[in-house]
Image (cartoon, rainbow over all chains, first blue to last red; front, side, top):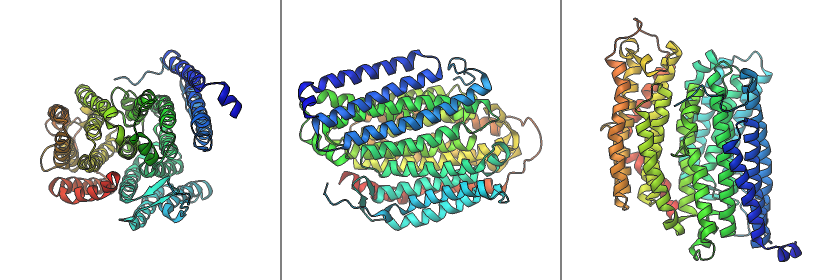
Length: 108
Length: 481
């Protein structure tokens, strides 16, 4: 751990997470399939995990807050994916589509 | 924070009991086929009332669980508040669930579990705990919104709510990571201590964190421009869940926001005050103006609740001990009033299957009690004197104006006048239009009793607001200690 934090500056990790996060937001805004939107949201969550672990290693290596936070993010993301897929599956069963543009009975 | 962690589990007794109640409901539903399912709501409500009485034992006590969860008057206030509103929703669901939904056991168990999440949102003083509580509440609500198998709108509302909710969680988490990075902690008091020492060098990280946290939580409480899910989720959800969304999930979001901003972000007040003020202004204007053109009562109340969120955000922008207690007062008044309105709508929908505003024609003739209660609730929401809404708004606007946000208070008063128009439209249909079908309707005693009890609460808060205000002041005192 010592070696890595000395060789690579914190900014590299922050840029990596910013790229991941932006890709996720882009995906949520442009993808029309509910499953792909869900995957884009997972990317955003991973960006947050990367940030957490990086901050933990660089700013307070003696504490575990950031790392524990990352573990919880992973767990909750898994639960979220399970729940979302169940809902998408039910929609698909009724409408034969997972395209969010076609699921449009509710408007204004 | 001291090194000795206080791991006194007895502090969490009410939540353990809530978990036990949820497990009991599920077990009865699953393993006791002879158990009459129509008793489940009464069992749920009875259990909740018992836990409510139990949680009153913590009044005026102050303690914390491992520095994560604080049990003080603020927590006790919201414990009572959330448990009571869940009990009302459980009772109001009785006929609706029996007639229209399958799997009542899961329905009531999720309702009870979501209450735990709501309570810990108010109680936690650490970002991870707060986040997990928020997700506990949200996950239960995602399932409950998409609970109906017969109504196609339910799935659609659930999907939209779920995807946007998950998106909001991701924004919130990314924001939290910047708050953690710039302050080195996730405990509210340590964050405040870190920021109090100056923010030079990480101004950008702090600003990113604040914007993202505000966006994420703004989604959860439905502030404009993060409100798109609200009308769809409200319309798609089973009616009692719509009531629950408008009451508990909103109040829990504000309970979290209030503790977070007063506990952690007070030293950097100048950085976020203008953001929340701007959010409050557009939320009030958009919520109330879009409500004008709604034809479905659920969507109308969804936009009206967005308008109310604007008033509440205003109190957050002008954060002080006076505006915090005014916020709690307004929140209580709003929840009591909204539940009263929704109980009338649920009763009417049970009997007539109508939820369009046109469908309320002649309600005064066919169900005079319901019409009177609904009219009282709508007058209260618009802020007429004598009703709860007038005094709670008056105290709220006054607290905001005295903190130097006179312009926000002016917008709020103007928008309150606008809101009278769309509430009166509903009242006009109920009292002036001729009924579509003749004949009096037989309203179940349970629902009319609940409606009368809640409307009595509306008048009580409207005429003697002092009592509730004193309770709210007690509850928020420690936030600014």
